[in-house]
Amino acid sequence: MKLNPNILITVLFFLTFLIHFSLWKFVFHLDEIIIVKFYLFLSVMFMLMITMIILINRVVPEFLGLAVIGLILLKFGLMYLIRKKLNFEVIPGYKFHFIIPYFVLTTLLTYYAIKLINHDKKQ
Image 1 (tube, rainbow, N blue to C red):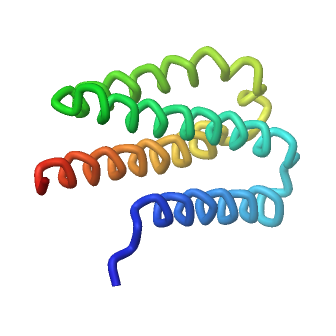
Image 2 (image 1 turned 135 degrees about the horizontal axis):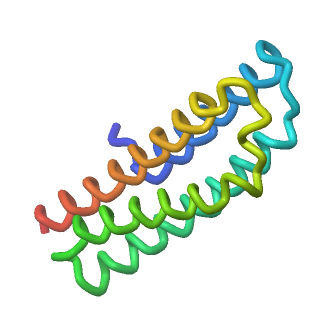
């Protein structure tokens, strides 16, 4: 049975959120509003980037790899700009709490782009 990459990415995204939220709430006893805002921002960015990857793949599939690199840089820049609004600094060890989900979602985005590239090569 072959698993659809869309389902796999969605399940991994929600597992990441559930594990991180559980650690945040029950182990570190931190305020859950900040992490919900953070994951809401990451979710919107992730869905926006998946949509952009799909559109780029339909219009100019030969530049998909370069577009993924550009989207990752854009995501990094937006995270840098939004960090003040989300009050990351008030959380002890905030760098580890926010860097790990960022890289997990970046990995999922890259995995999705690789699946699209490999699918196009097969056809």
